[in-house]
Length: 213
Image (tube, rainbow, N blue to C red; front, side):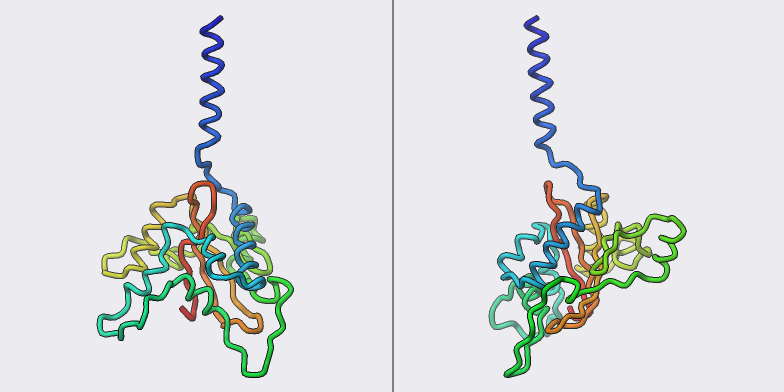
């Protein structure tokens, strides 16, 4: 009887420890929800860089652009935080005397137009990216090979390519790609690629690539 009771308590303890372990978040819908909150906070609510950095992964590539600067490039007067620079730099300065109307929804600021190939996949019943009018959330394998991640291990001294390869290898089934284009008043026009990874039980932004960055 005593042994049976011990086994029962042990089973409860093991079950509790199992619940505390980081659980894999494979559902694209989970990523979509976090990305929606982040983009809303960035483009619509215009939260401060410090608030937005709560979405940034510890394992991130935001310092790589600085490391990749040419050796003969002029030194910056003071160190610049790349993530803060990204969040602030997304907005164009309004002309003097002109006050831009603040957006009411994320749909006013960004959009996603699915490529014809993906639309054809969806119509044929093949699994495609999870899309909305604002952005798409894709597994790496749902995108053309080599389009957003290196197809093979980089052999050169390119820190960005090496980091993206690291993401593809270290976060298998824990890496998603977010795609969209900006369109709203006061935003720099660009097509954006975001890389989201699972850290613990949360989805975090690891890297950002855009036509203006």
